[in-house]
Length: 150
Ligand code: UDP
Ligand code: MG
Figure: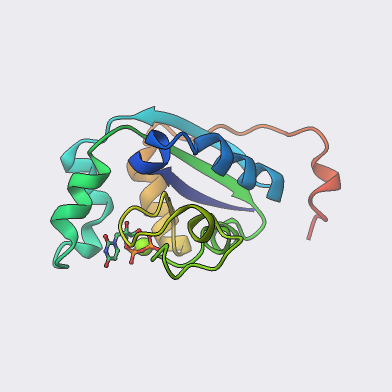
């Protein structure tokens, strides 16, 4: 089972799409093992997006992600990292495929609603950064109908 970090970005919260997005993750069979609504500090935002520090969009991205509260969570599931990335769709909402979160609800490169970790290394780093307190381990009813144990 993999863990992956999701961030429902400020545009997602402000547009009241958090429930809609979370419903898609739950319906897919992913399990929430961490979740909180927080106002992100500039320092945390800059650490999270450190790989993009030299990019021209970095300043705008930090302003955006700190511009309102976010809901950050950890999802658990079989191949959770790629499953979430596929559910989100391409970075640019204007180009993202219909049926994906970004394809259905975003028409912007920056305001693309949700972050998902892009590799096991990123997931481990991001989960440690956002959830230093750790996540929750629990069994979920009916999971044998969702997972095949492989
Ligand atoms: N972003 C942006 N302009 C760009 C590319 C990306 O504002 O030209 C923002 C966008 O919010 C994106 C985030 O920066 O989600 C991180 O970019 P990345 O390429 O890692 O995309 P992601 O992994 O989120 O699909
Ligand atoms: Mg990325």
